[in-house]
Image (cartoon, rainbow, N blue to C red; front, side, top):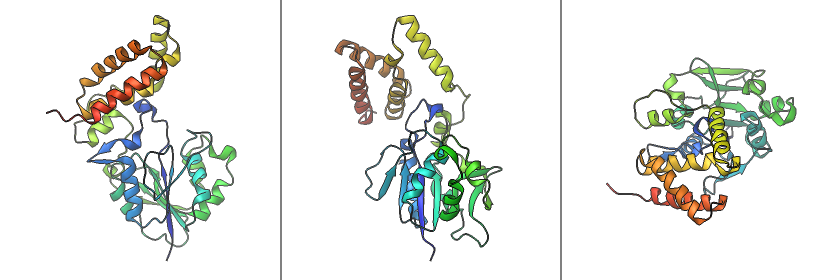
Length: 276
C-alpha cells in the first residue's frame, strides 16, 4: 500500500487582505486551516506538515517554517520535505474552503509513468496536487536559494504531472475580502480592495501628515481587528471599534504595546459578542 503525507501551506503574506491570517478565516463554521487538515486526513495522510506560524493546537500536526519566512510556496514545500517520510505527498494551500471535495477529486493512486497529479480548472492548480516525494526532492535539488520566490512551475514544470479537469467552483480560493464574503454566501460586490502598495502609500501619507513614525501604524493589526469585529459583530462596527481602540491606546500612553493591548481587548469583546 502506498503511504501518503501532506504538506499544508499556511504562511503566506496575505497581502490582498492586509496581512490577515487567512488560514483562520471561517467558512461554514470551519477555518480554512481546519478544512485543509480535514482534507488531508480524509485521504489517509499519515503525517501532516503545516508550513507557517503555529495557528492550531492539534497535536497531530508538525509545524515548520521556511527561512526566511514569506519565501513563497516553493520555499515552503522545500522546508517541509525533510520531515516527509511517505512515498507520496499531498500539497495543499490553506486558502480553499472546498478543500475536502477538491482533494477527493484527486486519484487515490498515481498511475505508472507519472510523477504526480493536480487539479486543472483551465489552468493547473499546482497547490491542489498529489506528487511522488522522490520526484519532488529531485526537482527541489536543482533550485537555487532554497526555492525562495520561485514559481511552482520551476519546481513542477519539469515533472510528468497529469492534470485532473474540474469545475472552477471546486478550486475557488480566498484571496480577497470579497472572496471571503462570497464564500460565506454573500453576493459578489464591486472590488474595492486596495492593492498592498496603495495601502502602504496611504499609511505613509498619514504618517507624514500627522508627524508619526511608519511603525506607529500597525496595518496588519488594525486590519485583523476590523476583520474580527466585522465577523463577530457587524461590518459597520469595524471602523468604530478601530477608532475606540485608538482612543484607549492613546489614553494609555500610545506605545505599540498599548495599541496591541487595546486591540486585543476589543477583539476579545467581539469574539464573545452574542447580542442580537
